[in-house]
Every structure is written in C-alpha cells, then in structure tokens.
Length: 105
Image (cartoon, rainbow, N blue to C red):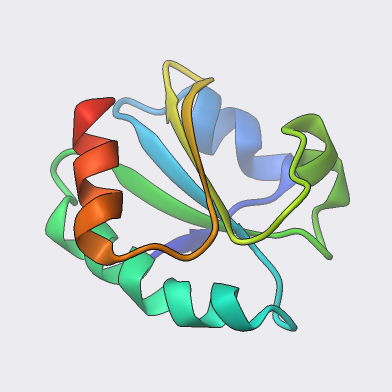
C-alpha cells in the first residue's frame, strides 16, 4: 500500500530514504491517474525490497508539484538519494513501468 506524500513529509520520506522512492503525482479527478493507481500499488508490493512508493495529490500538494515541474498527470518520478533520476509521464503498461524503474535503480 503506497503512502501519501506531503511537503511536510518529503524530507523524511524521500530525501532521507534508505532506498529509491517512486512518487506517483496524481489527482482524484484524473481518469488516467485512477487507472494507473492500482498498477503503481502492485509495483510497490512486488518491488517492496527495492523501492518505497508514495502518492502525491497535486491538488493538495501544489508546492511539490511545482517544485518538480509537474505539467501533466499522472507523472511518476523515481528518486535516488533524494534526487529525481527518472520521470515517466502518462499511463503506461505495468511491464513498461517496471522495466523503466529497474533500469534506473
């Protein structure tokens, strides 16, 4: 189960994380986001030993969305050592997402 990411928890959850972090930037009104949500949950469960997964609601956390230049949602950003290392925009098949994540771990 992915956890909610907020500006208040970003430092601890992403910057200070012991392993890479995948952040799903989404919104409740976004159809592709709702479709991608369960896929991201599955990836988080299957890759629990490799990555942590968080969801960031862009309507609630506009500052984080602005900080990372989120223009379209869903956007997934993989962070390593607190820095963004790979960005994936739009709904994609699970196999494609997993391959891209693993390529950047």
